[in-house]
Image (tube, rainbow, N blue to C red; front, top):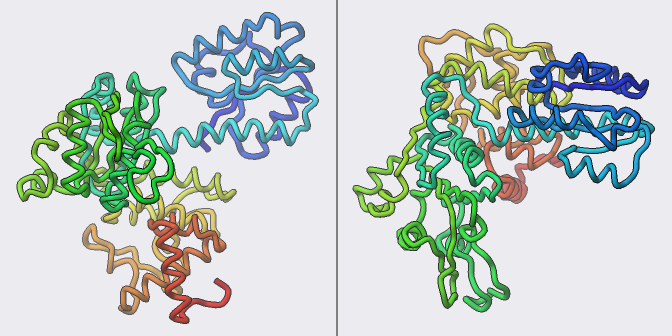
Length: 451
């Protein structure tokens, strides 16, 4: 399991905490004091629990050691003390402590504090880290660290689900703007009029219903990074307004009387052939040349075989922890399936596939059936002559697409015990779309009573 916990202290309560965390299956390293602690252990840990010695709250030398290592690594640390004052607790929180607790705190609350600190780290890994073992992509990541130091626009090109937003967050995190806002907007998800107000904001009274002043996403991203997801879906009228932002560094709110200066780094993404869009007149050439100072093409997952097993293990570990399942790994047949499957939905499809398998698997190892159709009574075959497994792994009667869609929705709801948000994530659709589908099925009398 990812997540290393380092515990330092001699009190009985500290040792009980150590044992309780080990019983949860977490990786715990224990030292009675700082004397035998190696620098490498500190650098590798994700959460540090440190027990203050008597009088140490007035001269905490351990903080110096922690702060030196934190320049090379990031970890949360929790301070425990036999007794202390409010001033002392505030002091440690200001110095970067995740939390400050007394040793007399009930053990279950101490456990939860450590788990919360670890969970925050896990969220950081999941949301801000672009994971890969592909040699070409690793070289690209190193180059992007240098690019991130500038303010030049970046264009990320790749199929849906390849991790374009994660890569944009990677650039933001390694830039001087990392402490500023990271604002993302999906240009394909909003109609033109709504996208304009979301991007540029509006003044009170700018149009019917504008009862208050609203800052746009560009203004909110001032001092940070703005991600324009699927920029090729933006209407030409908005493209010209965006061009002004890039050229002049200022934004005009709807109904505004004067432009507002902004300092924003623009990162754009697209899953289309943008050169073709420009050639056919659907995307402005002058805007294209502004946003593609640096262009990165992200290869699909099927071209990154070394990432398939690596990411599958990562997602297995993550969802096993989230759903409290003790799954050891994949069967050999399941590994073969993953390595040969085409993954038209890329990393997003792999993630959803593993999450579904973890939720439904009742054995120690995930099988091909768990990965493909866990609710089918037919046993899938693992023989294939190529990389497309659409017809080789599951043999079933051909059904209309709308029937298959309804069955997939009902299966997802059952797997998620009726949780619509989680079911929508599994299906790769929005909660709003899921609710609209369920409403339609209910009106048509196609929805079981228990749903």
